[in-house]
Amino acid sequence: QVQLVESGGGSVQAGGSLRLSCVASGYPYTGYCMGWFRQAPGKEREEVAYMNNDGGASAADSVKGRFTISQDNGKNTLYLQMNSLKPEDTAMYYCAAVTPLIYCSGANLLRFGFWGQGTQVTVSS
Image 1 (cartoon, rainbow, N blue to C red):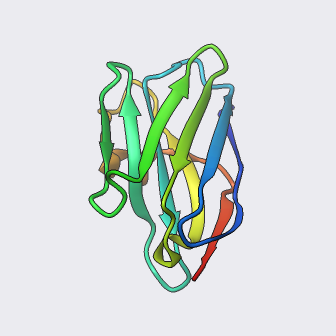
Image 2 (cartoon, rainbow, N blue to C red; image 1 turned 180 degrees about the vertical axis):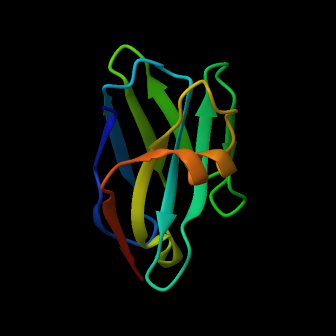
């Protein structure tokens, strides 16, 4: 059974940084397709960034240049380095993964992915 556990969230002031981690267990497809999503109160869950096993990565326009996604396949861990945080980044952040049966894309992660419980990020102005 795939389990994803996020950590690293917290409260920071605008301009600050946080590094989120997502440890995957029971997921033998190391590096295939994992990503980060976020959901603010009253809003739909949205894609932040994801990456595939070719090392390719995609990020939402709202976080490009500020957030960096990376993974350590040896540790089966996905990271999200968040710099220059803004109040509008405040949300619950979730990690997602799909199996190689599913084409790697943000939409497919959102629709078919395994999910963690999330970690809260709060940015104050």
